[in-house]
Length: 107
Image (cartoon, rainbow, N blue to C red; front, side, top):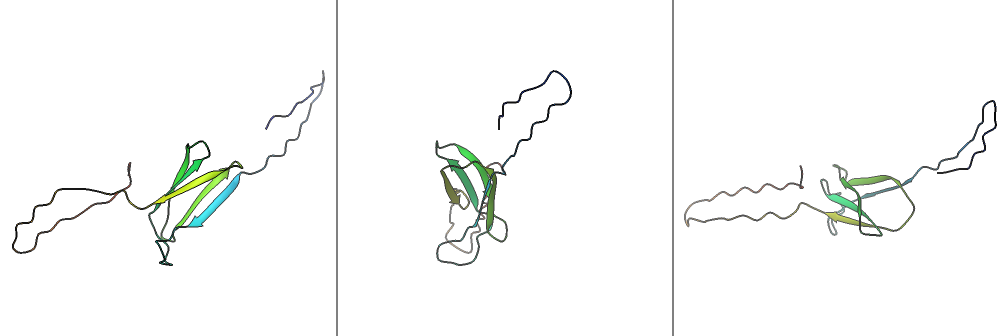
């Protein structure tokens, strides 16, 4: 916010500025038709120019939130964990174990 202010030669000059709080976007991520909230989903907020504004990871309640946003057009991208690929050899008899670890990049 920028306001023109005229300053006198002496004394105190006072200027009041009213600042508006930014917008809040909040929601719940669910998986398909399952009404249960989806925890640990990654939600990305993208502005109209295609820039990533912020990311959020849902909590146990499936809630994400973005605060202090300017008015405008945005897109939301919600994803689970990125896919993981690996090699596996099955020996043919007994039980073969193969654990898979999923994580978001940078975590």
